[in-house]
Length: 486
Image (cartoon, rainbow, N blue to C red; front, side, top):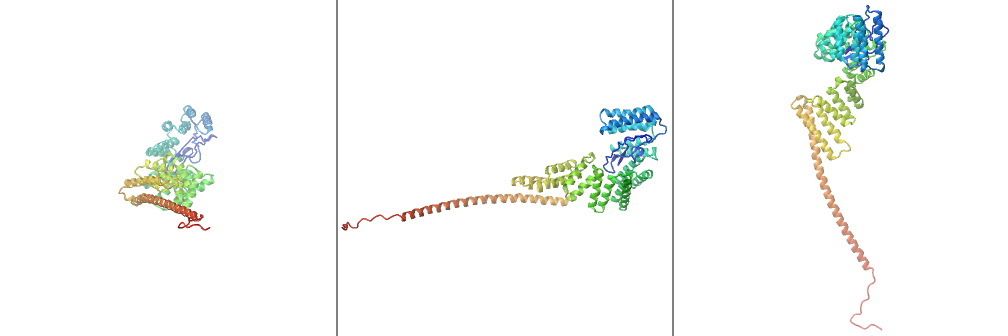
């Protein structure tokens, strides 16, 4: 989790700009969330004792400008320059005592999507106010988002050094980066440094949400990959974090998500699913929780829930190349009989990784078991569709070649090809039998007609004979010319 300090206000003022809304995805990605001075409890900044009354009044006026521009929910267009300029004017007028104002101008540019301008402001502020930790933190987050993790870590550590008693966001970000390093190579030194950094945050702020999230996650990672005893520690941190946050009417989607992961370690999928759903209740677009909901829902054949969860997760740009998610989405759509959508999802997965044979195999199954078996498909269409499936299976076999990893699936693919060939051969036999049956039917019909005609003829003859036998017989002439009696 990358903790980005957003609009900050001087603690001595009655104004606290709450522009630090959550946008978290998981504990290993950057995000907004901390408060001023390294965060934790809401946006606030160090209150420089040397700040004059006039400086504070000018800062308050800049804050009002920001609030007015943000009244419709966002800052855009000309508002960006105007609001950032208002904060920059305060800094230019009053100098380093108003470093917070210059920092806020950088935050405004970030809100407007102009991170290049923000980067320049933070870098300049670091050189002019080297003890101002917030600038180090936000500059580090920019580097992190660019994939420059070494530079980001250096900035976060410098932020901690600049303000050891308060730089909580920077400390959390140190932990987040080191957790990533540990997750990728199980470097114990990275783990120890991350753990120490998080404990430092909790020593300063026992209610720091990001610290609980980071600590629970790094314990889970170690327990999942190497030492199971750390799963117990992760569970304790989750329980404690949820309890502490609850006393302040706060909740953490990350902690619920990790709770779900811990339940999966115990093969408790039902309660794990409940925990993941709690995570998305708190944060509807929580990427990792939605992915977990999707995968479990597929196992339960709840394809509608799975589809929705995957679609939410894949809206996150960092998941655009997640082959597993696209494949799983295809399975969910196939289960919902959304065959065109399923095919598109499989093809997307294949496009992302042409060497992955699974989308090819799934395309074969889609055509053979689902598209070709629809009620509206006749025999000719069926053959055409299962031949498409056969092509996918052959491509699958060619892709995996002699890779023993896929040996079982190759056998299944060959078996499916044999089934397709048998189906087509059976269709040929059936067609020949149907042809012969029609020929026999025609012969039988002809014979029946001939027999019927013969019987009708006989009937007519019989009727004619009967008619002839019932008429009066004619008188016979006298024999031998004898004279008729008188």
